[in-house]
Length: 114
Length: 114
Length: 114
Length: 114
Figure (cartoon, chains in turn yellow, orange, brown, cyan):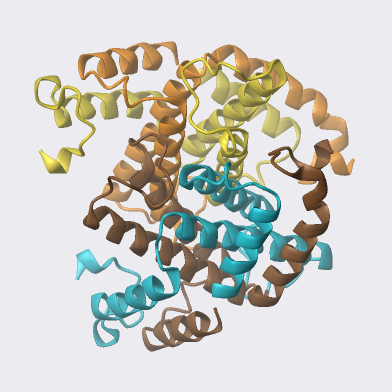
């Protein structure tokens, strides 16, 4: 994640694009990329793990769109001064406490329903 | 990213949640989390870098929601058998070629407009 | 649609909320509501027409969230000076030409693939 | 809204597309269209009412994308057996009660904060 952050910062600096990369702009760009991921999945019905039946082109497109989501997410966090690697560790620890394995085994209920 | 992937896989296994974590379910979960990020930004007007004027609670909430987007993104990639760290490096190299710094300096146009 | 537009304008005026309802704010609010719709569908697998198996509460929540999407969409169009009822008629006529029934019968391909 | 519903139903029937138009497919299609709206707004900074400075092409594209969101929203509601015109009236009445004009005048706080 730190590598992506650094490479994207270089990429943006070299192009003088920081003027466009305010938080809300990056958020809308991320929404746009999530929309492109959705378009790849929309008319196919449920997809099983590993996406059997997808062509090489579809897989390649998916890899590109998921990467775009990640790139904008990392840059959005940076421009908001959120330390994403640390934040995600804290959130995963929180999730472990919110959803104790012994209690929620095999159930998709929300933690507020326990 | 590999650490997040591994920790999330453990988290999901311990709770027997893989039955719920098909690709489209994870995609919709990611859309839900992106929506929660949007809600934090919606009534404030443009936010400058570093989010001056945001309270500690707002920042903490933002860190949580951005983390949730990342967690579902990493798991979605895994369940689609997309190697996300490799894909993002390939995509960033592609972006460098699509938007040559010498050509696009200071312009927000799409590459199809060059 | 015109009724929704007028009622939402009254609602916003009475509360002096037009100061918050700029186009990008409304767009992010709509993204937030779409995220809430996604959350209702996320862990269930494919849903058949009519949503068999959904509780009354789930259906009621869905009706509320779809309504919120529509309310923000109508207001977003208004604040952008887009005549939505007219635009949708034009877009549907365009779709009829882009996807001739004789050609696309039973196929989910994009029009660029014909 | 009833006209859009009826015209979209005819459009879908003529093309034998109901097989693709299950609720979750339509939801992802709507997410895709919301993403296209976001892309139109992403690098511009805050847009004022009426979108001063937008070209005729940008406005036309926006009208098309907002229409696409509406078309999929109406069809999604139908396939979920949600009566959207009635639901939106109920939701607007609920919003009036949740946010009394006398109390919330000029404030963007959430109703849970009152």
